[in-house]
Image (tube, helix red, strand yellow):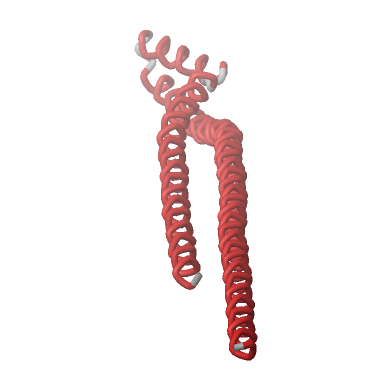
Length: 198
C-alpha cells in the first residue's frame, strides 16, 4: 500500500508540474500576444497621426483677405509701385504669420481629437484582449481543477480497491487459518479419543 501511495504522490507531482509548465507557456504566449498588439498599435498610431495631419492641413486654407492682399501686392509690383507693394507685403506677411499660427493650432486640435478617438479604439482592443486572456486563463484553471479532482478520485478508487482486495485476502486468510485450526483441533481430539480407547 505504501508503494501505491508513493506512486500516486509522484503521479500527482508530475501532473502538477505538467500543468504549471502548460500555464507558464500560456502566460508567455498571452504576454507575447499583448506586446505584439501594443507594437502594432504604436505603428498604426504613427501612421494615423501622419495621415490625420495631412488631411487636417488640406482642410485649412488661407483667408480671402490674405489672398486678396497677395493679389494686390502682385498687381502693385507689376505696376512698379514698389513702396505700396512693400507696405501691402508687410501687412500680408503679418496676417499670414497670424493665420499660420491659428491654422497650426486648428490642425493640432483636429489631429488631437482624431488621435484621442483612435487611441480609445486601440485601448478597447487591448481591453478586449485582456478580457479574453483572463477568461481563457480561468477556463484553463477550471480544467486543471477538474483534471485534478478526477486524478484524486481515480487514486482514491485505486486505494479503496486495494484496501478491499487486501481486506478480502485477509478475511480469506483468517477463514483458512480458522478452518486449519479447527481441523487441527479436531484431529487432536480424535487422536486423543483413539488413544483413550486403546
